[in-house]
Length: 365
Image (cartoon, rainbow, N blue to C red; front, side, top):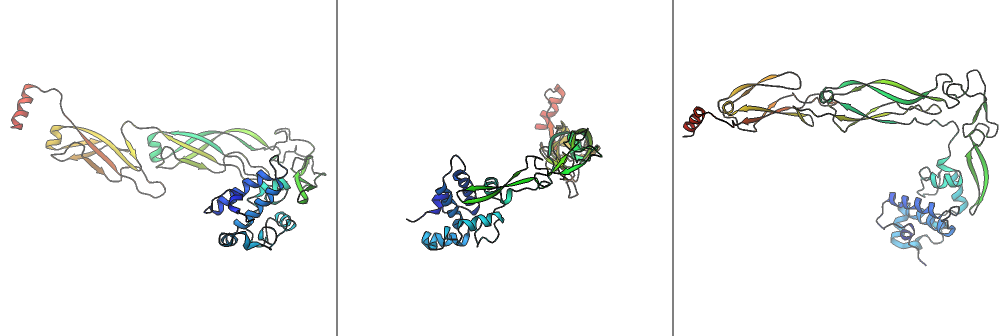
């Protein structure tokens, strides 16, 4: 009976390679015999389907000729039996006869279940410290021109007493006798595919590979301590509300020599009653009388820095815009500045004296 590998993986015929890989991962987890939902036959069938569809050349052959194109070629049409498969998995997928397996990516399937592949970790593997996210409030002009802000950070830092090695200074640190410093213990495990070597964290040292006889009296054998400190952070000119700035290496300390994490500052900028910002441009409204608009005038306009004199020509209409070149927001990392636009609002008097009315009536005539 012909096999439909697309149907076995539950994907459409036009599925991308990434979609095929995700479907395989999901099915392999679901049908593995060691799980409550396990099904040995389906597990093999899913793997067979991926060996064909996961290879672009073999996928083209299957699309043209069906599974008949691979008859007589061994398991899954790849020339590999299960012993070959287990061996390639332990080696990380190398030399798998053109099969498009990514065992590093699939380590959560084969490494976590069988104890080999991409999920194996050494005892002294450095781990990056955790990141910290914070919200930072800025005044309008602080965001425009940049500022140095003093922030308070609560984080884990390397213990200065033991320098992070978890032992009281002057006391010995011994190699774990159970795992020999590897941090893992190897066991033989019998499965439906045969015998596998499984690696798990050493129960004696907890995967550290070493044993501390006397724990540090300051950090109690953790290697890090809580620290509340203040940092000076430089905020560049031109930032906007909603932006996130990264402060590298100032968050929680790493483990086993790993780099410390980063601080991510989410910026919130207060609004200004006088200025409106649009990107790097600034808008400001200026009220003038209808006489000034009709006859022309010179008015004082407040900018982001200091006030300037702006000439209003005769006959200026309401909502006219005057551009003040390079009076806007500094452009981040590129130099230069945006523009400032003065929007003219013409005030019409609500109450007029008899004399004023007569003058306007004569003008209207």
